[in-house]
Image (cartoon, rainbow, N blue to C red; front, side, top):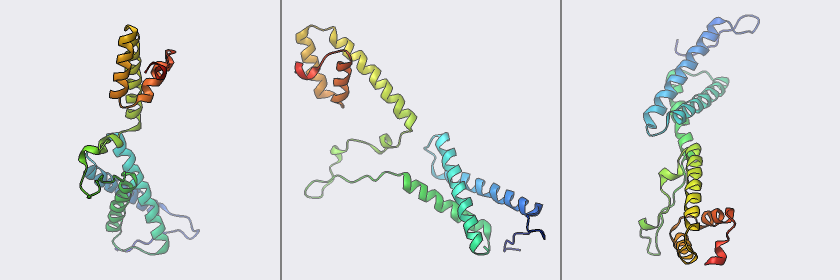
Length: 186
């Protein structure tokens, strides 16, 4: 029998065969989601892969349930595989950043103007937070070292740091934490 009919008892409650079918479908959905996610997202961390697989499986369950409310589905396994694949594509599209190509007035690529790479955009938030803490700690060490210099050397080093550093505001904040306003020194 290719068309799935959901068996019920005379009281309207689902019997054990209905529950068995649901368990089998759920196992198939999870296996299909795992296969699609792992085959197409090999560069992601295991935690991200797990969350993506769970999201794909849940979205598939919802779409399958809604579809079964409207009509009977012939070849249900193929239908589930298609839902899983399209849900995976939808999640990837929703989470991928839009990167605009930088060009000059002649519509030529400006590769040297790209400031952020795609890998920097897609980092795990925990990793980004850890990196931010590490930068703050390094900045504090630099400020402590600069404060040990003679005033003339200190002013020259601060000017050099302001020109070379990616985020001058972070440098200013680090000096302000030590009670020094570098805007008045420059």
